[in-house]
Image (tube, rainbow, N blue to C red):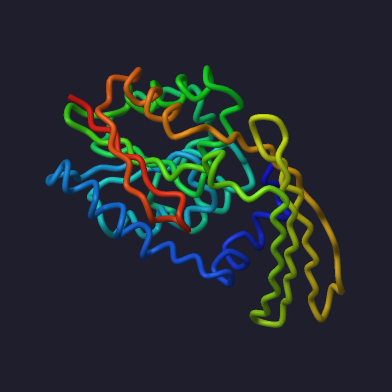
Length: 237
């Protein structure tokens, strides 16, 4: 999952598809500070290459990241040399630190394979909150909003490199299986192809909300953001 090949082009391909990491960070912060006006510290879980984290660093006094993919951790550390970025699994980690905000962006929460793992993930997030802190989760699609058989394709060119991405997503029980193919072409190196397969859980909204409440968080769902997937906000006592 998320190896060196994808790490190299991850931000380029998603920004070319219209993803605005800065706008998403600002919008999430607006919602968070409606619940916790003085929030000054943030942990971004499943932070990837640090694309959101770079913007969060300008919005909070203290930020940190956590990511399972070691190639992505290395990329995030290169881009954010003054920010601690930890290798860790969202389903169970202990940083011996607490934050006013814990975020999990880009549908990454869907990599929890079942309800037990979802509950463990939210409980882990809650343990890393300061009193009154907020967990903000950009979920994957709900079963009723997921488009079975969805195909997408994008091509972008920047600084002499052309990247093509084609994906197909199909229902697989209580999850979706997404096969993604990439072709990367450079003038000097030529063209190369690689592919990745992801299985991402399709949790119902009620299942997310139950996991938030089980973690001791008061949960609110905000429809609309993040390409229509929405945003969950869980506030600690």
